[in-house]
Amino acid sequence: MHPAIACGSLPEYITHMTTSSTPRPVDGRFRLAVAQMNPTVGDIAGNLALIRSARAEAAAGGADLVLYSELVVAGYPTEDLVLKRAFVRRCMQTIEELAADTADGGPAMLVGTPWLDGDTLHNAVALLDGGKVQTLRYKYDLPNYGVFDEKRVFKAGPLPGPMDFRGVRIGVPICEDIWNDEVCECLAETGAEMLLVPNGSPYWAHRADERLPVVVARVVESGLPLVYCNQLGGQDELVFDGGSFALQADRALAFQLSQFETALGFSDWVRQAEGGWRCENGTFASLPGLDEANWRACVMGLGDYVRKNGFPGVVLGLSGGIDSAICAAMAVDALGADKVHAIMLPYRYTSKESIKDAADCARALGIRYDTVPIAEPVEGFGRVLAPLFTGCEQDTTEENLQSRARGVILMAISNKFGSMVVTTGNKSEMSVGYATLYGDMNGGYNPIKDLYKTQVFHMARWRNANRPSGMLGPDGEVVPVNIITKVPTAELRENQTDQDSLPPYDVLDDILSCLVEHEMAVSDIEKRGHDRALIHRIEHLLYIAEYKRRQAPPGVKITERNFGRDRRYPITNRFRDRS
Image 1: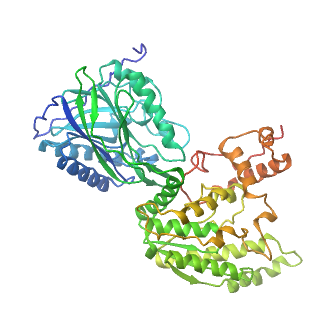
Image 2 (image 1 turned 90 degrees about the vertical axis):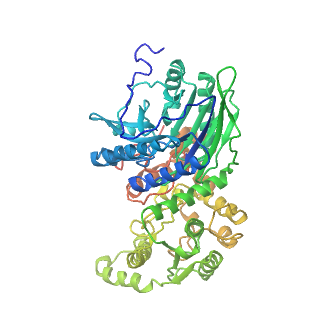
Image 3 (image 1 turned 135 degrees about the vertical axis):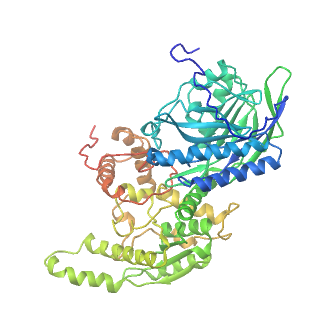
């Protein structure tokens, strides 16, 4: 036992409803439904409808209990919205409404919600059954690293004891509570027979591979089966991939739900002769490989951002380059061709090849494609600035005028028709500042913000050869091969290429990965075979571009350490690693 904190010390919370029915006790067998749903932060009424719909389906399937994801009533993560007391009270009222639903004798529910205990705000889960809020449990381990910031808004609860569900003692650790051994150990010591875990675990590459060992460790330590219910859907920069699953007490996989898809999974649990519970006939779905998972994450993040924020569609500049082409393909997969509008914005440096490539890409995707030449606005800017620029050589100032003219035109189209501008810069460019504020950085959302340039090329080739189920775009080549194979260029001056001022992307991206993802010392990066002077230059570019990244639109998190939520560097920063 833990001597400092008594296990299971949280008192039961019970409300008395005017009508209730006596729940049918579990007699050696019960059916569990796991609701892998896509809630929206702040949409309490919409989330309530999702919860009720899942319960109705679970009831039709003979379920005794429905397990939902973390904070499903409010949506997750709530960030500072949960500090608004009116919002929390409405969530609590919704829990009471849901509790009343269970007076019909149907399935009980384990529902995540913010909860005020006096003046103390908790991340909670409520057991609703027989017309009542039978009991509450509060999250003990509040994560405060990476994308998580829960200690800012919630207070930790005490170490929990098990809940009594119709004669079965269930432990309900909440998400982070299973990433150390303390909570599950306490639950096992105080008589829990199985562990049901509501989660809000966001996606990044290889994240699913990290979850399984954690769950295995808790099962081994506790000797109990564990059910892992994860949230689905895009929420700003984060994408929740679902992938809910369960392990038997012997660590065998009991069931597996899909990733990136809404699902209601049923499993039957039977008490064994020796007293433990075992899952029978669980659902088994196959999981996507890494390339498909990354693609689905980008598509889901963009699609949910557009839909949940009420945009009728998207507009983007289609330059004939790889970044805008892959963003157009992702937008079509997410929203359908009828909701994607591509604009070619040519200037004197735009090659005939790029014009053809952009048109071919639009044709392959089946999207609307218009051309708006930018010579007049660019040259107009040049004329009005000429008196101030007398005697100055042309430089990146004039190049940036092209990008900013394009940004103004795209924003005007967005304002007129309501479509959101998709921003198309990759992580390599954003890292070293090769993007123009108020130009190509204009927009509402960027699906490839966390993909390095080498990943962009790889994903374009992959999508040309694969069309995952549920994608709204066509089969076959959606990014013309010529776009993938030609030398990358911004076409802001004659004969320009990206490699005029940057090293080859395989070199650049490896250095950036060392600096951004792994915070490696320059001396250690040099041991990988990179030139020390080049590393110093890239590090310098990375630091001085921080002010640009602060003004960039949100985008899907794919890597372990994205710009914004994960990596928070000061803008004013004179440190340079010269060790």
